[in-house]
Amino acid sequence: MPSLDEQTLRDTLRRVKYPGFSRDIVSFGLVKEIAITGADVAVQLVITTGEPAVARQIRDEANAALAALPGVGRVEIKIDIQAPAQAAGVPGPAKIEGVKHVIAVASGKGGVGKSTVASNLALAFAATGASAGLCDCDLYGPSIPLMFGSKERPTADEQDRIIPIEREGIKLMSMGFLLDDGSPAVLRGPMVTRYTQQFLRQVAWAPLDYLVLDLPPGTGDIQLTIVQTIALSGAIIVTTPQEVALIDARKAVAMFHKTNVPVLGLVENMSYFLCPSDGVRYDIFGSGGGQREATRLQVPLLGQIPIEMAIRESGDLGRPLVASDLDSAVTGEFVRIASQIRQSVENA
Image 1 (cartoon, rainbow, N blue to C red):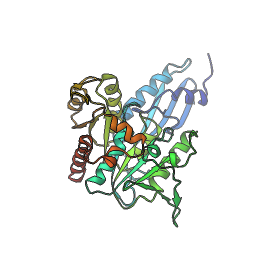
Image 2 (cartoon, rainbow, N blue to C red):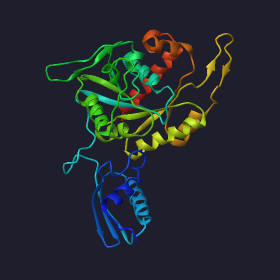
Image 3 (cartoon, rainbow, N blue to C red):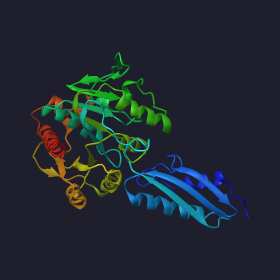
Image 4 (spheres, helix red, strand yellow):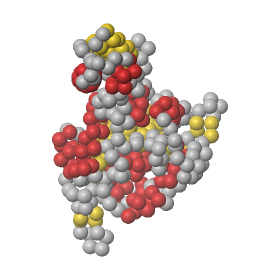
């Protein structure tokens, strides 16, 4: 019979993911103590959550993983559940100084046009009379510098805060402003968390009415860092109409629900194509998917953005559509979406 040791048990617990995320409970630091008495194993976990179901799922999966190990007898999982507030030295979500509302723009998968929506939404907030900023939280694939046509390097003020780049009347921050063209961001977990916090806490955002966060796709380390440390006014989920995108959108919605962040609604991007020659509508990716999913999730369908060449061209040229064509019907749709979000969070 193989002998049991703490390292083997920790390696086994690395298979247990935090619900809704790709990271495991060991790397999150939830495993505080492991005791081995003969064949019996006792594990002490400390979890900061307001959702009892999260703790139950982690306990059940940890118990199953350990019980399956050869030579393991009785397994005892002890969980200390701590409230996700600033108590007992445990930091919780906090506001960004000088920023009234922080809106996360997320998607379950890449390629749905999330950065395009985030960029135009930030500009639409400005078009409705609010002061706005946009933080590109996708450290590995930053696209905001290209979409706003800027290669500037940020500078610092006298308090050593990063001064955001300003374009089209809004404040911008992105890893792309710190990298040379074509240089990859080679970062591991701790550095990802550090840069994310710097972009949110050590940038001179104030004063702002709205800060839009362009999150990377999926439900990983960056998303978890943000929802656990930043007081979000709400989240917007971007999807396309087809089922393969909606499946992943549900995962993003579930992540925000589990972390008590209100989902303000869905935006259906690439919703349809209007042929410019005859005005015939083509539902290239299907139709009605966004509305059905919004109804199922009991959240608003905030808007439907069509496939339009001008949207792609404006982003590639460094002036998103809301900045380059105020009279466009799509610009009007983005402004309408921004107005709905403002009404929702300001009346909350």
